[in-house]
Image (cartoon, rainbow, N blue to C red; front, side):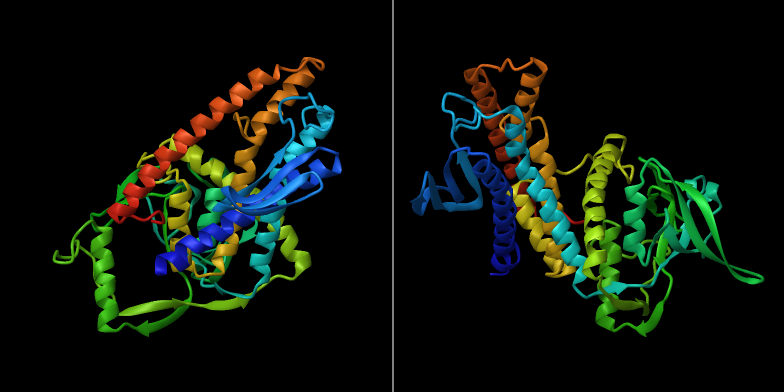
Amino acid sequence: MTVLFQSILPFLAIIVLLIVIHELGHYITAKLFGVKVLEAGIGYPPRIWGFKRGDTEYTINAIPLGGFVRMLGEEDPGDPRSLAAKPRWIRLVVLGSGAAMNVLLAIALFALAVSIPRTVDESRARIAEVVPGSPAEEAGLQVGDVIFEVDGHDVQNIGELSYRIRLNLGETVDVRVRREGGDGAEFITVPVFSRWATDTYIDADGVERPQGPTGITISPAFGSIRTLTLDEQEEIRLLILEDAGLSATDELPPGEVVPTTQLVPFSGTQWEPPWEAIPTGVARSYESIILARNEIESRIRGGISGGGGGFQVTGPVGIAQLTGEVVDVAGWKSLIEFAALISMNLAVLNILPLPMLDGGRIVFVLIEYARRGKRIAPQKEAIVHLVGLVAMLTFAVIITYFDILRIIAGDGIIR
């Protein structure tokens, strides 16, 4: 039941919402420009129920993985009300409107996420270790420095620090820290390079660890100390063993000590009014594309952690698993931002110049522009899209196979 309510149902709700909004963009612009819409459906056939109004059938279908809009003559201009018979600029608007709706939805969801009151860790990040020879050491960062800003953006906790660093991979960013000295604390700003690919290093305890883009190990800077119970200490011991690749019956790695106290980070309730939340939504939507690009490029260059293991691709089964993990780790409110991320990914994916996708169809319109109005034969375009559909379905089956193997093995996506 947990899997049903925490993974499957939220995943289906997100997918249906995102795809229906995407198709709504096509539907509205098609109707606006006089393109005949044959069918608008929620879900995919077989059909469960439907009715017809005007020229369009509205249907509810059995496979709950989104929706679709079927327009007359998407490749064949034989009918004056077909999509292919419309002027090129109208076809571009209709074809691009789905991705545009997903971008607008992502902005709205990101804005909604930051406008809802939420508890935010405000403990800042303290540098606990600087890797020798790393960009952090070259920049002059020191153990004990507390990080307050990266690239002009306030960073309240370790998560926000990681976000800003990974957003600027391959670039030098200004890091503002507070440093304790003989005459008291002072704020200084140093330029630090954020590397695409890094190696591992051996720490002072002889344990091999990833360096990270800048070469620092961080811990919460501010918080309150509380005493841990015996059960909590045992849980931490098991986490240390798991991180070291050991079992519950093994000894702790050299230098590892189970803590008896814990630093509880300072936190506060934060939210943004609409006039601030909307610009934040725009910024987060754009940054999500940059983060995705950086992740792919960093893996190609050798991996952020130096593992070179490649980046992970998931299909519907994997996204459903990830949905459950997001709820389990970050709570139900986090699904709003998660849906926004998927919406942006859907927008980018659909606009790529791949056959059968909106971007692939846009390419044929642009080719027609380049050929000064001479279009490629509808039969040839249809064949290209058919081949693309077969390739995508094959790819989806392969990804689903590996998603299922991962679930059977008991592995998660969030590490």
